[in-house]
Image (cartoon, rainbow, N blue to C red; front, side, top):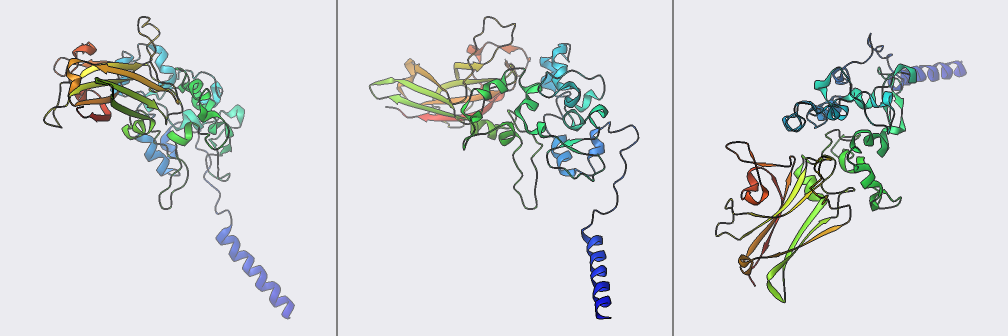
Length: 346
């Protein structure tokens, strides 16, 4: 009797543990017609969906800057990456191809995670719950730089990374995800961020570059300037040839917060293919740009500043007409300040 009672108690315990720790109810089946919208991911992945919905991936088709630069996608080459077909369909590492549907969703969940039926269907992940409704597959390609390269190597960003020290295996190794999809670290957080911070996040830009300026000891009117790309695993700036960064300077105004009076010194940019008269002036990973500044007004205190732009042109606020760089005296109205350095009088 004691044996039977013990066996009964053991079976009862096993049943209770199964109810608590077991796999739970079977998930809902994949919806009829498969996964056709990122909104279908929202209920199971609310944090990821919330992050993606405010990211530049989600805005890639409707972003007014993109529309202006692509002439509302009359430049059809831009469609490939701003509304791409599912990357698992076109091939990981291969150039993205344009899709004809759901373009307003931009680069959505399906673009990166949906797997075609001929490859098993469902969705791809790197750490998956195999019992989930979307029939996830573990696909390690998602974690590879080449996956991002389908779009982000159109302007050689992945090639720039491959040539940098960030790509060398070892303690200093960093890939795209380390900077642009960092692991969440908040209480109860897990997984990687899907905010996809890049050039639109000025703090990330500031973490990539340093600006230094000091007066030459033996030449009091000459100021030596350095812009160092110490934190980006690619050139600065990179990816969109529309982006630019500029070094400006001005005699220090009496009011530290005064606007205007800036004078252009140097432009850092990768030109479009059609701009054959503009040189490539990007700062490669780990490299330092060295500039000399000498003018009649540099004998007194001077401010040197680095600005970052998402579009190549400084436009007149009233007319919207692009201005030549030498006529730009108020970059703060049309660009983001990265760093400003005060150089005192000798």
